[in-house]
Image (cartoon, rainbow, N blue to C red):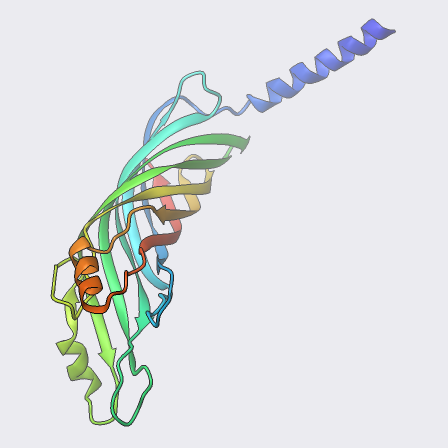
Length: 245
């Protein structure tokens, strides 16, 4: 009776393994184009009157190369190159004589070229439906963007003020602006579903690990105020669609 019981367990395990690998992903290299929306934010520690940042929406697009490892039961490596809009918003601490309130906002629009490198695992729940998740670092360089300041006060034309207060996001200006360094790096993850080995829907998030304030800005601010600026990091949440070809 005991031998019969062990035989039943062995058969159940072998049947489960066979079903688990029945729809195992095909080995080899494939490519995927992606397009979607970012919701990004500059993260800092707001203190001593310095404004905190709120989120802003942007766009992203890119191309990925996925390599399904042989005999790895769904484990794969992926890398790509993306164009990604990041940044954030903050209120302006600008005070006028008869209106001691913040009178506008600054929008930080940062354009990056990013290279994500990740390891992932894919499971084909059905013959035509695959589920996957991946995690790993990314490396980025800023290629453009603006600081756009919108000031609205009695006697001040908001349009003219915005035109007068628009700066290149990565240029090292004087103490009127908070300029960012170009280089960034961090870690992120992505989960997604693929239908018919072609159509993909994905969500993901990236946490920047680099302080993107310029050192010269930080030193100048400390010399003028005696206050050390908090570190600022990129954070980004994305929703994308993709097509594998």
